[in-house]
Image 1 (cartoon, helix red, strand yellow):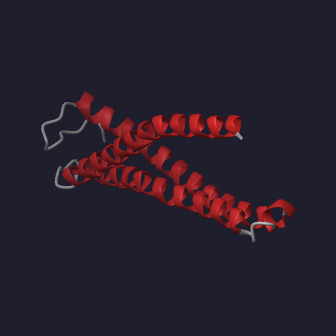
Image 2 (image 1 turned 135 degrees about the vertical axis):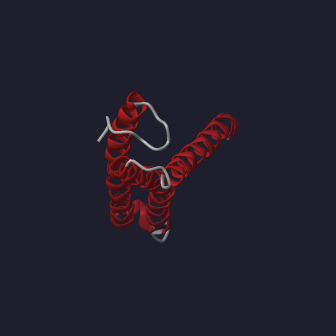
Length: 146
């Protein structure tokens, strides 16, 4: 498969690299789907278990529901980059098997979407760090003042 002529004009070495990348992206995407599923189960479990705690009952069970919902939202957000990675791997495999290039643009479009999504999540995460620091300072000042 990897040593055959490829209509894109890729060298056999480039085709070999693409084949290896495709295998790893398939592995990582499946692992990501499994982790998203575990996060959903954890969200449902946390929502249920926290409502059993006496402290949570004072809040009317809202705390458990909010934490459970947070886990589920995180799982849904992280599902999409793994979907893009899976689609890349699937299309790259088809292109490698057929030694043709029509689907390679779709494969790379999905890889591009994966990295854009992860980049945006990284920016959001970095933006949350100063907000967390400010919130921690405000809480510390309020506790010290009270």
